[in-house]
Image (cartoon, rainbow, N blue to C red; front, side, top):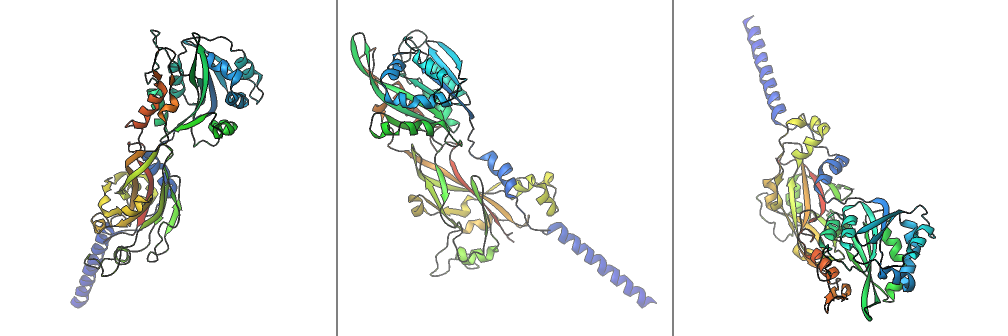
Length: 461
């Protein structure tokens, strides 16, 4: 009887020990695999922290300088006549700039032969001086519609002083470009008589649009005047900082030693899911032995490659760095289903986005050829975790140095002032100011991330 009781006691102790051990495993071990929803990654992780390109309404406003500039264009300019049909088709609201007044006229007949726009333009017969071009541009750039402005850019302040040498367009232009938009400027030389003397002037057709729209007005307008641009009758300049981008031109993980990964292309980023354990990556990708030493006569293999930088119209990218962050906890705090699968409460997860940039490095030779090739460094193992059944790593490719292209011709935007012996430089200086502004150049905080890759890996013990 005593032997039987002792046996029962021993079995009970073993059972309690087993249960205690099991409880420890459940509390301290991983209860599943990290699962990532790319749609949620798009909307709650990537989108809030990347470039914002504010959309424009599918409406167009047309501002016309009620002056000799437009009267001459109507009578003599093939460029203006080429655009006239499109102006009638796309204009929703027309504003006549009459000094400090803006006469607003809705275009009810939107057609290539719009009698509304046609009659208004051909009704401009008087030169109304002191057009407030500065306010017109401010109105456009503060609005949310595409716009066209036709003017000679002569501007007088409230005291009647001419501002031919003052860059009065800078602030408004900058605000428009900061929002991810584009300004196309068609410059057409023409002559104007003033006080018995003929002056060589410039007529400007400013087109305020956004190239990311499905059908920006700039495309149709510029198509109409291509023959004149090709023949040098007029010139074109595009001002923007939002046309720098990265494309994938091959397999991201073009590596025979990496098991077939899952690669998903999303809006503005790629998602890569790796299934190899970190010991295999260390040996076959990084070419390191179990002690972390380089394996003799073997070169490391890129983890990410075949990403190519495309420079913009105005800027060229001269240097990029990769900023890496372990965002596993951040992701799980947003995806409660994934957290629940790991026996975690998404509300209780402490978000600590660890900067793990030292674990990655770009190939500088490839970078000089506009290619983004990413290698792992031994430091990567300092930032990995086994806590969440995997690691979700964000790689942001960040512009750290940019240069100007040689597309901006200062003299193209100047003309002989009618009011002094100097060249009128207001437009040229305004554009030049925008190009060099710290909030516009591609290294600014809202434009410097040119591409993102998310990588999900196995846990690291």
